[in-house]
Image (cartoon, rainbow, N blue to C red; front, top):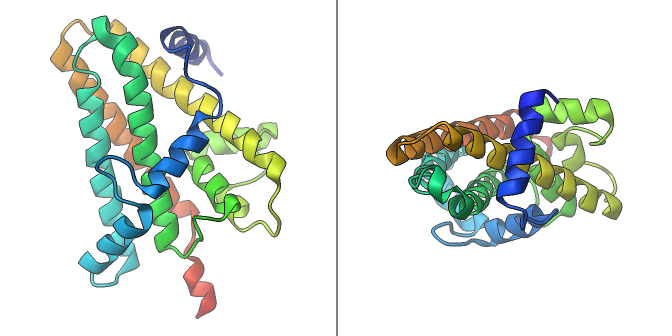
Length: 225
């Protein structure tokens, strides 16, 4: 990790010391069950599938587009206050973008034939949210045992892995989101500009997560034909 990344994570820790390690597991559960404007994953995925005449890949693409827009909207709103309101808005931004991304990846997994109630699949969903580059780095360092696809299709569930992955993902996501936001807002004196930057960053980040989910979580339904 470079100096810039370390500074970002340290800044995030100072801004939001109350974000607990492992919080992302609770966020994932709430995202899958449905929260706020997000319906339960099964309902959302089903509606997208119906709207696209049963075409799974078109439904998946539609999910990526809609969640990218939603992430951008919450990024805009939670960054409108500029640096003065950062201590209050950054926690909301972290939770908001995490919920949207959890919901997106879980919805894609469901459409691709994975059982989202399976703890192995939930671990895979969390791993996808790290992004391809981070996953590869963590596998190389042996802080993550294997790729998201391998986690989802592992022959056995390792309960010890649940907590480890949750902590790793929490640390990465919170550090990345808070640190990036803190650095951005530190250089932005105009509140509306902060909102635009937040919208762009969260929207693009969510699009990347969706694309990684599309490429990593292969369609398991093909194997049953």
